[in-house]
Length: 207
Image: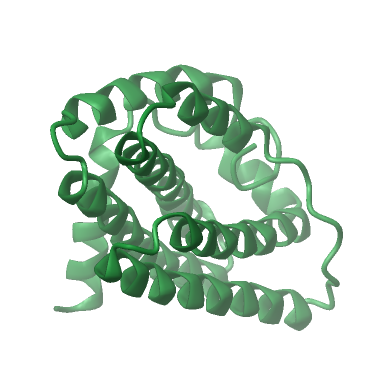
């Protein structure tokens, strides 16, 4: 499959999101690319930590552990890749910023509660949602930034994030038991669609 085909396939995962990010966000990011790179680096680190956390909570599912181990490694590789982009620009990693968007999704996930099975589905959908929105933001950066190097960088990352998104959804459906995972996902998409209306106004990956 060519890079163009991979890119077009990755774009399809964004169709479920209820609201697209305003293009003004990409312009804001370009005006302060150092800030978005710093925040992006921490997003990759937290994504790796999330995958490891899931492994510790649900070690009984061998295929899930194997898949999320690969994702954790890949997210750390992305973290290193962002650090290299920063180094090329003479930018040092700063402290992470609080991600209020993810915080709202996390509270929603906790509100679902319930059995271990229900908790696994909630965690998978939470993880998938973050990957889907990150993928959508990467697409916008790939299409709107003027720096050719960053355009290529975010196009490649978008393809990777789309794969992560589908992986989390796959395990939610596989281990969801009698839970109507697709109905739960649609409900979560509705919630995220309302949440994201308050974001896209600062130069952070989910801000």
